[in-house]
Image 1 (cartoon, one colour):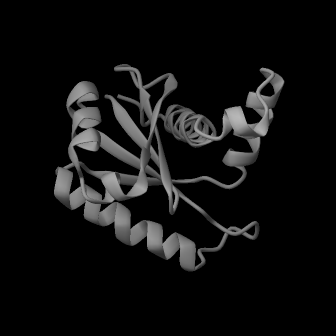
Image 2: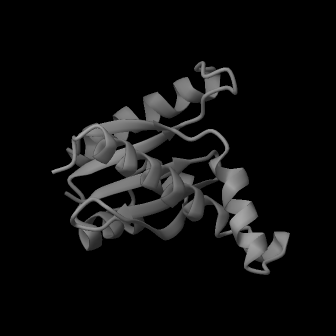
Image 3: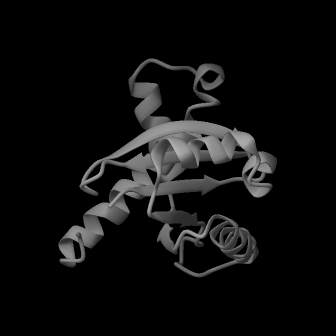
Amino acid sequence: MRALALDIGEVRVGVAVSDLQGKVASPVCVLPAAEVEAVAAPFRRVLEDWDPELLVCGLPLTLAGEEGPQAQRIRKLATTLSDKTGLPLEYVDERLTSSEAKRILRAQGLNEKSMRGKVDMVAASLMLQAWLDSRRADGREE
C-alpha cells in the first residue's frame, strides 16, 4: 500500500511517499501550502504520479505530547484534503522531524540557504518512515 505523507507548514508542504510495499519512505518535493490547500494542479499531479491509497499527515504536538492550536489547524486542513481527494487519513507525531531533517542535511554539507527547500520533504519522509515502522511493529502492514 502506497502512502503519501504531508508535512504541512504555513508556507510550504513537504511531500514524501512510501514504496508499494509500505516499507521505505522517500522524499518527493516541496509545494507551496496554498497549492496543497486548494488541491491545485501541482498537488493533483503529485497524487496522479504516485497514486497513493492513504494520506499521512504530521501532527505538531507539543514536547509534552499534547495538541495545541497548530495541531488543530493541521487536523482541519488534513480533513479537508482527505475529503477533497477521497483518500483515508492518518496522523503521525511530527515532533522534532524538522530538527532531525536539518541535522541530516547539514551532515551532507548543505548550509541553511541551500537546505531551505529540502527540510520539509526530508521531514515528511522521516515522519512517514516512523509511521511505516510503527505499523510494521504493530503487525498492521499489508
